[in-house]
Length: 393
Image (tube, rainbow, N blue to C red; front, side, top):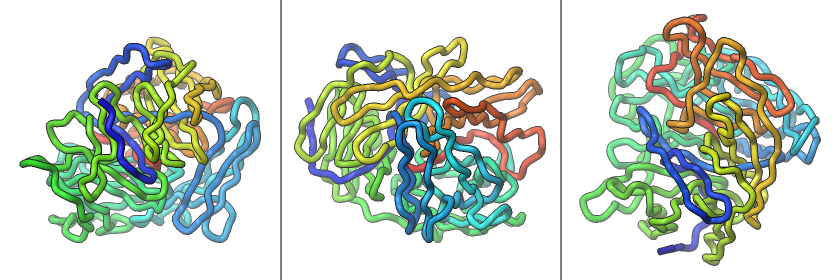
């Protein structure tokens, strides 16, 4: 049964999925430790919508163009150096530099860059309620203000740069208690986070997960439902289909499901055609009407491909990511929060180095490099412990 309601924009998901090209059988694997959701999206061109800035797009084979407020490069809110980007829609076309700084190293706020990927880690491994957000390029500069009861795997960035998450069955907007963190973590640090008005789940249920997408809209699912039905803040069902779960919400009222691209405005849909039957790692919506998906096409070898799915359901290969650096491994496809796509198409993945408990982050670019960009062996402030990667829609 398919139920659709009128809705404008949104994003993200909550199982590790295998998208099914053409509407055949679909397999899903339960998310590993920490659960979390998997979203789907694909293909060329990059999209950046910074707070107050104009959106960014990259043409086929062209370099990326970032436009923050006042133009120039895109600020990533978490400090650190620049990253080389590849925004080609096929081959070639290394993009320009993206500033991952928010004003340079040592600066961070509670408004992040949705085009970038952040580590939601901890400043005190093994202790509840000491989580922190940091850009992978500057893990010594952190924003804090979370408590142990919140669901870290529900964290999503709006394209305004604000962070939404689920706490005690309600949707909250993160307000930083210390930006940057200087060694003091306040108890009850969620008290200043905004509670977003939401119709209650019925009956006797609570909000379990959210999807946040382009335009700042968000929807939620209720506990015990296995994310089969999704509602807006007024309690109106936006999507529900027990045989075809919602995976990601995008631009132009479009949504990606396990089998189809759905137009939520008029309840029409088209099947996904031409996509490999492979586990889904990460997703982004792509303006004006497409999705990007990173697929684990070779689980034994670690091979990953980037695909684009357009409004007609047609899937097109963008390219293959280079291998993981020798001596390192990345997390398998479950849970999905171990993988995230930048707006440029670069893929970031949590992984491990050759030493015991050496957590790392690997960044892989189509037609470019595969590099360890974060290494816990260097003793960063923000470390990986029941952690995930967070980005925009």
